[in-house]
Image (tube, rainbow, N blue to C red; front, side, top):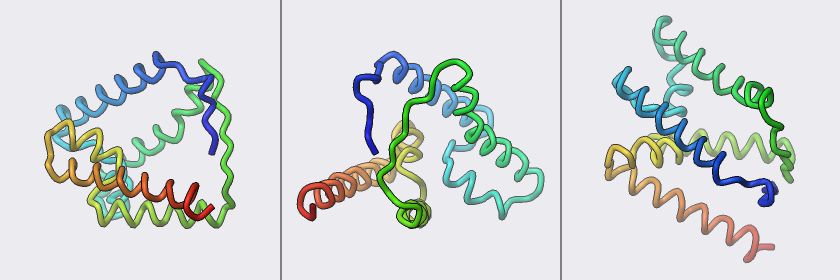
Length: 143
């Protein structure tokens, strides 16, 4: 995956961070729940029907967001240098990790750290350390 650094603008990143922060805070204030996407998706199939509807709507909103964004600005180019089997395996491993880690990286990093959760601090530091080690091994030591 390549990032077009020349297309990076701090203002769009700031706006995205503000929207994410406000959405997270509103979800917690209005629903009394943490905005953990892995939990929202993971619990969708086990939830009662009334609970299932808002989860489905939430996921549809996530899936439709790039289309809505593309109405106002061009989508950034995406270049993924991996095969479909590798992507599927990576997705399954991420899903497994979110279950064992009681949440995903962004859930712990955005929602957990903002609530001062010690568990989320440890989880986020662990995720980041594992990511650093993995990138070093794949890109430098094993290349």
